[in-house]
Length: 62
Image (tube, rainbow, N blue to C red; front, side, top):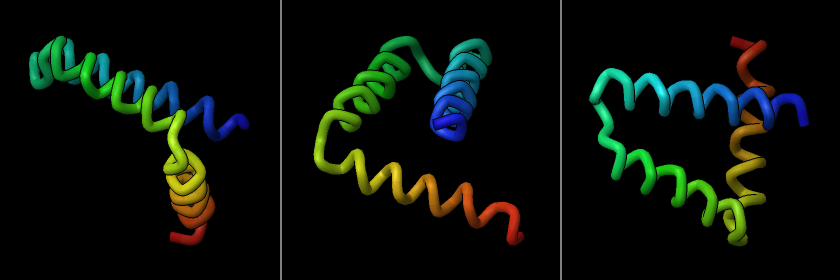
């Protein structure tokens, strides 16, 4: 659970940085957030969580 919250904060921070640097527009940011929100309610959510868990578990071995 702590990893999930940390990743949510990390991606949220990245989204804010992209918005402030005007690399990403407000409409695109809204689309990205809504895509993530609706993706979390689909059957793909378990696959995405497993993928992120595998990446996080693999990082210390690098």
